Length: 318
Ligand SMILES: [Zn+2]
Image (cartoon, rainbow, N blue to C red):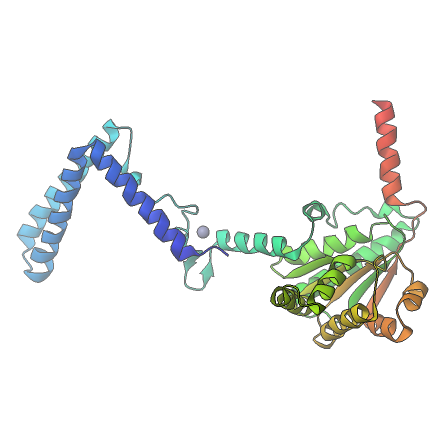
């Protein structure tokens, strides 16, 4: 996150520099500002300390005349009083990040969302995947797919509320929309300020191996901790990677930890359940799938192939 105090100081410094440069260009402006400063101090002296109302009024009039003179001078140079203001990125909160104590500014919320998205590890292209551009009518049984989408929306909502008891296992051949649907859920919960970690299984297992062999042990340790504690963990493409007993054991530990804390996860796999059981031991796969809702993706043809065919058709037509 941005260090806002530092940012504000820097903006203030730039503003002071700008004014100093302006004084070099317009010496009369410096004179006026210095006189206004002196008169303001005198106002405090006669007004608050000596309680001299008459003298205070005279000073007040003089200050107003000086301000008018300054306004005119600035105008002659095509400027106005905003030169005295730092150039805030967010004028609403002057880059503080909050409007008043306890009320966060929208710029801060936006910054937090951006940080959530970039920390998730989700490829930028997948941020476009939403429920709105997931089309059930591409599937053999659109009504059934609609039902699954409704379940996924409910699932996302429960994660946002911090009351999700289930997990999701998506199985089916390559290019059937598993990644799209899981990314839609991830994007939805991130848009509501929840933390998501999105990892391809192969990358996740590399990370675990690195951790074992002490390469950047601390960084990997932090990452593993985030895998356990984030609001939603998505593991994409499980089953395509080379595994060892150690890696499987680590994966199961992460998932069990999450199950224990009622923290949801989504796994996408090209393998069907029988293959998963053959691939991992039955005990492991049972534990993985213990809490998971399982969706099988059946479409007559692969969506990815369909898209490629559509492109070919369009290219031929053009
Ligand atoms: Zn703001």
